[in-house]
Structure formats: structure tokens, C-alpha cells
Length: 97
Image 1 (cartoon, rainbow, N blue to C red):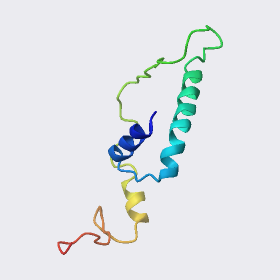
Image 2: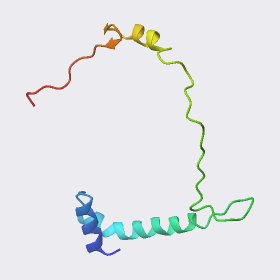
Image 3: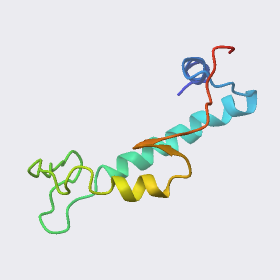
Image 4: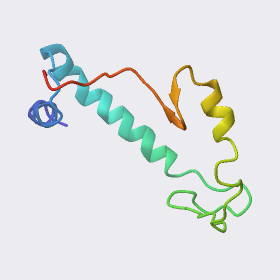
């Protein structure tokens, strides 16, 4: 990457770069890209197939594993201030800001 490309990338990402960083980043980015290209060549030990792009979805049935409200009493009892099943917290927002 050129220094101009680094400056453009810095502007797009809203990162202020010093002149020293602008000079050193092209070599660092080239090293990172070289490393990524070696990672892409990694293969599966069993099949020898490339592992890049291999994604396996693990799906399960969407089912309720605990009854509704089973833990409510335990959780609300542990909270310092409550009103029925509502937890009372300190106000952190106001219209003044």
C-alpha cells in the first residue's frame, strides 16, 4: 500500500495517523496480508481439504428448556430494591442533557 492509500484509509476510519505511522504502516499491512495468505493454505489434517470457507451450521429445535418465571422469585429477591416483580434502579438519564 502507498502512503496516500494509508492516509485515505486513516481518513475513512477517522483515525489520526502520525507521519511515522504513515511510513511504517505499508510494511506492517504487507506483513499482515502475507500472514493471512499462509493461513488460507491450512488444510484439514484428516481430509487434506482447505479449511477456508468451511462453515457448519449447528441447528437445534427451538424449545423452552425452563418453565416461564421459574427463576423470577429467586432473582427479584436478590435485588436490593423492587416493586412487585419490577426491579428499581437509579435513574441515569434526564431531559437536561
